[in-house]
Image (cartoon, rainbow, N blue to C red; front, top):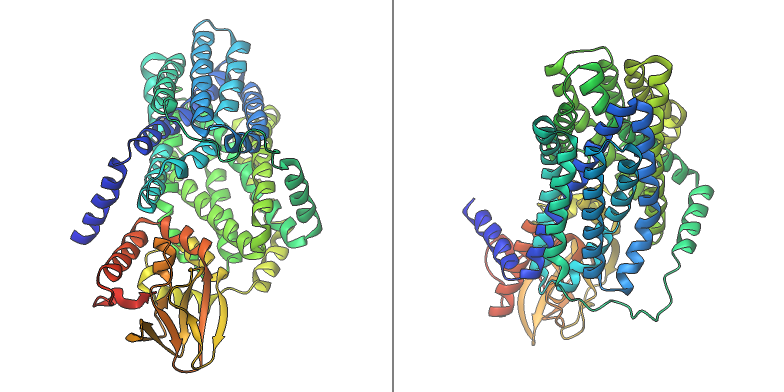
Length: 554
């Protein structure tokens, strides 16, 4: 425990040394709060003025411009200062939220809805610009890792906190006050990043990336591959339910439970709490067939929604929503993991680009479905109708899903090998499985150099069978075999290979290329701390340290 606490302190110290990163994170913490709180408040306002139909329409018109702008803003951030794009986005959000507050207080509904479209479109600049900005101001890999950890914390906490913020403000002073507070917070966010100066990654005169060409290629891939069609259809169905839930929280609070508007925020927090708690449970999915877990999570989520439609009371509603959040989180992890298994790595970017567009379309469809069902049969029909979406998708694609799951090889051996390495032991389940899928087996004959001292490092090697000698300047440092790894120092420190690694018997290793290795190690705090200790000790002494941490070298 003491070592882990010391590692966390080291992570925070690395952040404290970089004022620019602290300002970016402070601004993002504010953004996470305002994004969800403003969304809840606008749906509450629309529902209280025009019922489910108006609230659904407002949700859709907010989503469409944001979906179109997101890929465009990522390209803009590459060719302009990402700090300027980020600060500009926060300022537009602040102005639009302030205008929305004025419109709400003046009871000018159309103006309020127009402002919602503007600030939602501006919110689509935040994550793409921040993704470009953070690596540009991070001074070390440790700082980049610390940012990844803190961003994850902020996202998880934001699911719960923003709902509470919206609920409390609505209860105390009304919907308009949510937009006032959000506008002030957005101004603070803009001020935090507005003075940062970062050189664009690409000069303004360069040709823009072919965003439309990439999207078209992704659509062709999805249309031409049955496996992709199945997975994208199921993920889109999941998004339809998620889009419906945003509006259903409002309907549950006001129309079913007969509570105040503030309860829309509180119910959202209960759902978010369940999703956060389920994050750790995703480890059970690693290395397993995913057809049954996907079906079970989908049916559990649907059963909870159907139960909510029967009117179970306040306490049971809060508890069931927590269960629904957990089921939705597990469903999302399982579906995306199966998609990753079924898509070649070189096509992943384009396929996930298509998925992002389909996700936004699913949200919009869910927001349209709810008011239609309310019109046809009332609030309870809307809940039951949302509950039917996933079972219908399972009936339509369940056989194909199980066939796909059975046809895709699960890298069980590779997962077991990575788990045996202390360096990777604490990685989360999806990351570990992704690394296992990226491994390439390499056979090495006795006497052959796997790694040569002084050469640049391009890969890490996990030893599956056989034996190797690590040799530095003609001296044997140590012998290593199965369950040990070599090659991490050159990757982590960007230095030439510090030792040669020579097979002393016919051996088999699994190669992990530089990019997936660094992405996994630098994106997980505990793994990064262990890797740093190994590399620092070995570079300082020139010889392997004792204990379990001696298993990676060169």
